[in-house]
Length: 584
Image 1 (cartoon, rainbow, N blue to C red):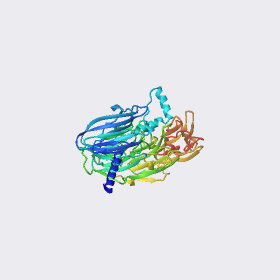
Image 2: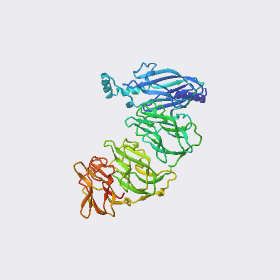
Image 3: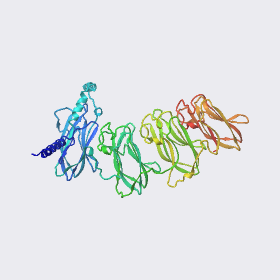
Image 4: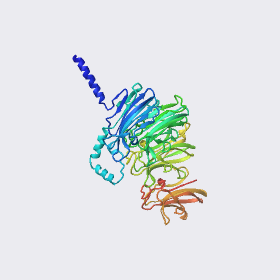
C-alpha cells in the first residue's frame, strides 16, 4: 500500500474514533446525549420526516435523600413547545444494578412527523433535592455532610447519566446538537427577548396599526413569598402607563421543572396604539444559571410574541426609539436624604400620567422614599404614592412603582419627593428597581391632543394667589408668626400638621386677633385627625369664619419630632409640618 493511501486510512479511522467518543455522537438513526456537566443543559434536536416510533434508553439520578430525579431528561415538540416525554423516578423500568441512586428507563413512544428537542439537565451538587425521613437518615445526612463521600458519589453518578434515542434511519435525522443547538420556534416571532440572564431589565417598543390578537409566550419565575412574578415581562400602554397585559399567579401555569417556573401561552387582544414591553429578571435562577430545576422550555426564558388568531401581516411595527411623551417635569435619580419639589400651574383641567418609584419600609408598613402632589391653594394632597396604589417595582421586595393616570383641575400644585438615608439612586442597599434611572417621580401629559402650554413650571415659593400665611417645614424649637388681614367677614381654610396627644399639643398653631390678642382659633387634639405615620401626628384641615380685621398666625414646636428630624414615623405630608392658611 502506498504511503499516501496508508495515511488516508489512518486519518479516516482517527476521525471515526473521535466521532465515536464524542459526547454528542449520533448516526442517522441514533442520538446520544452523554458526558454531561453539572449545572448545564445539554441539548439536541431531531426531525422525523414521517410518523414513527422512537426507542428511548435513559439513565437518571436520584438525590441521595430524595425519591425525585435530580439528573433527568425530557423531550419537547418544537411546534407546540409542549413536553411530550419526561423521565421521572416513577418511569423506572429496571434496577441499574450498580448504584442505588441510578435509575434506568427503556421504552418506546409513537411520534408524529415533525421536529423534536431533547434536553438533559444535571444540577450542581449543592442544588440537588434533600428530603430526610427518619432518625437514621438524619444521622446519615449529617455524617455525609462533613465528608466527601456524598459529593464523590454524585460525581460518579453523573458519568453514567445519558439518553439515547433510536428510530428508523429512513425518517430520522439530527437537526442540531451541542453548541450548534437552536430551538425551533413554531413560527417566526414578531418580537422576542429570551435566554434572559440575571439582573436584566429592558424596555422595548411597538405599535399596532389596527386592533389585533397577539400570541404571547412568556416563561418566568414566580415568588411564592412575594406573591408575584420576579422574572417575566408585561405590556403597558405607552400613553397612559396602564398595564394591558401582565402575568399573574392566576393566568399562568406550571412551566415544568421547579414549581416556581411559570408560563403564559395564549392570545391577547390589543387595540391600535403604542405599547411598551418591559422585560425583567432578578439576581438568580435564569438562563444564565438555575438554582432549581429549569423549565421544560429553558431557551424561551423571557417573552416571545407571535401572530395571534386573525392577525394580518404588517399590523405589528417594532419601534427602535422611545415613544415620545409630553414630559412636563421630572424629579429623578434621587439620592439619600433628599427633599425635592417643583411647583406648576395648570391653565385648565388635564389628564396626567404619574410615573413614580419609591421604597416601602415593610417593617414599619410605610414608605421611606416616596412622592406626592399637593394643591397649593389648600395644602391638601391630591395624589400620593402609597401601599394601595403602588405595585412591585422589581429587584428588592421593598421597591414600589406607580404608573397610572390622574385628572387634575385648573390650579397651582407642587410635586414633592423625599427619601431617607439609605437605598437610593446609585447607592442601593439591596437590588435596585427595574428602572433605576427613573427613581423618583415623573409627570407626563396624556393624549395626542395634549397641549404642553397649559402646564407652566413655577418657582418653588409659589403657593397660589389665595395664600394668606405659609409657615411650613418647621424644625425643633421654633416660635414663628405672621400677620394677615381680612378685608370683610369671610371664611379661611387652615391646613396645619403638628404633634400632640390627648393630654396636650407639642407642635401646634393658633390664630390671634391682633387688636386684643384674643385667640380665635387653636389647634387641639380634639379638633384634629390622624395625619399618617405615628399616632401623635395630627392634622387640622378645615374652614373657620373670621370677622374683618387684622390677625396673627402663630406656630410653636418643641425640642423633638419635627420636619426632617423625626423620632417616630413621619406624617403623610411632612413638608407641611406647620400651618398654611388660604382663602377658599
